[in-house]
Length: 294
Image 1 (cartoon, rainbow, N blue to C red):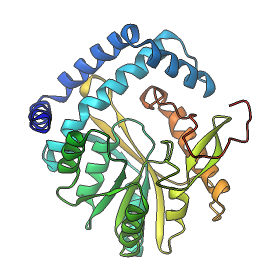
Image 2: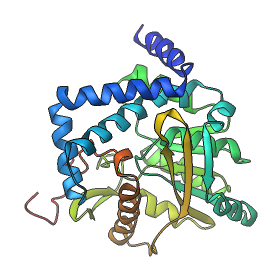
Image 3: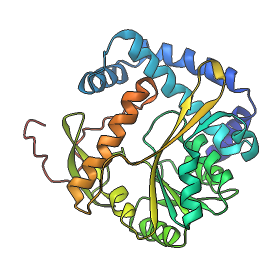
Image 4: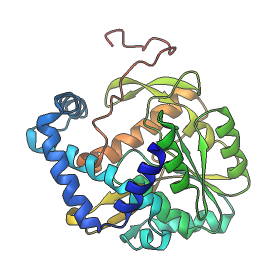
């Protein structure tokens, strides 16, 4: 029953104009500033840690953009891929993708939780001549997982869970010259994948090692991307850039390089980064952080 209701709501929302969805997101985000004190405090703490002014205006902006991101999921999952592609007004850095295609390289596409990563991933998938497999952590609610799978596994889109089975699936796809998307800035589960402590805005954050591992697969090109959300529902801009820094195969070093890249993108689009997320939590089963004050 719940699954049917979620499918109905998502399909309904997917039909609404983007400006209307973003207007609702603005209203919901503004309201949550007053009704969600825990989220407000988390955002303020994370902004200060990142060296960004945590005034009310910025906190409200983060809450509004976060709400918009949630309302964009139905669009990403159930609107026709060609219609999704039409929402992107500009694309910067596609030449890096073309270079990898010309060289026959697999594509490791990394995006932080910024802007509309699901819509950006759908756009990229539609432009590629081969499948794109997105890694994701299945939600705890099974009904919502079914909706996510239905929305992402269509066209040339595939999914892989964030566990060893999913990693094997991704490596196989990369070796075949295909593409994958990884979001590197959620706290990994020590029971499902490897993690290390690395600095994120100067604080120890338990960080996945997967992105660094995948980048070491022979014949793989590593690129970062971001789907920037334009104001007033005008659409999106896709930004693609090479990885900043050099990976060397050492877990902590590579995790730090990835975190440094996430910092760069978060500072570039601060209101659109998921600062409501507790990036510094200590997951059960993880070793103690080097910073004993945490």
